[in-house]
Length: 107
Image 1 (tube, rainbow, N blue to C red):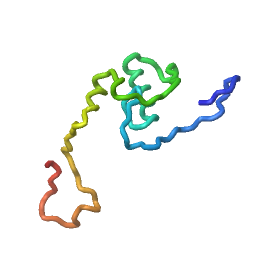
Image 2: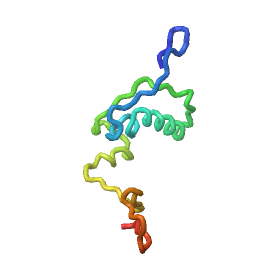
Image 3: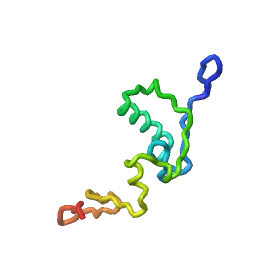
Image 4: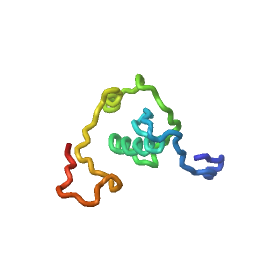
């Protein structure tokens, strides 16, 4: 928000990311700045029971992986990390129209 001296809100707008699909470290782990702010509100509300109107975010800055402190964030810094894909469903464009057996979604 840009606020004038009288307290009037001049501009309120959403900031869009240049590369939204690249994972970045903000003080909170998320893909976008807007997502990081939302997660910050939720996390602070859950841990300290702070309401959203009492939290004021002054600056958002991307931080290096070496400066991260929480173990929940550090576990994602491994380059060889893998995630299971247990329920893979074929999209309609790759799916045959008729098939003689039930689909197998677990590989």
